[in-house]
Length: 263
Image (cartoon, rainbow, N blue to C red):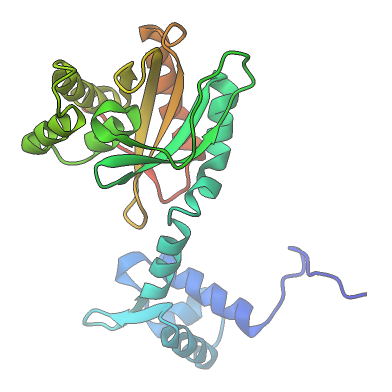
């Protein structure tokens, strides 16, 4: 019976050598490497490295760049990362973080992204508590009234006129005259502390705290913890906000980073 090769007996194949070359180019960063340097670092002879690079370049995994024409990573890898970071894959990428957050807080955890001026809920993890908050994946809620949206707005460059527009759109009938001020205050606080809070502005009796994670290769995301307002006191919201940042720093996908705080 044929067995799979183990890590102790790595396969010596053209594919394996091509991956070694690709990883070597990747470690060089934007400066890239010349053919001879790649051969020296990989231990593969220059003729074989040249053939492997031609194949990788044909598929756009590497390219020659700059005046010295060093080999650098190509567009194909960026396309793969963007595809894997698309909405359909984000729940899979962030599931370990969401599960740990729900386990630690025993509250409802959401993953969301911006869709125009709405936040779309891509995934959720429900706790095992008897008193829980209802939610639905695929639901859309306005940026101004959600912790997810507020965190994402706080992660973007400041734009006062845009904040005004968001607040007006969220309350066109002026039924909640303080919403605009509360929205602005929440965004300012998120920039200071690193997490955004929503306390019954989106749904009566419900409070929420959320953080944003940004990426240069995929869509920015936000993660929130939601619970009954009576349970989510000011102190607990701050405690969970700090926990969100702590766990995200450890468990979020490598291409995602926490937004820096101003505090």
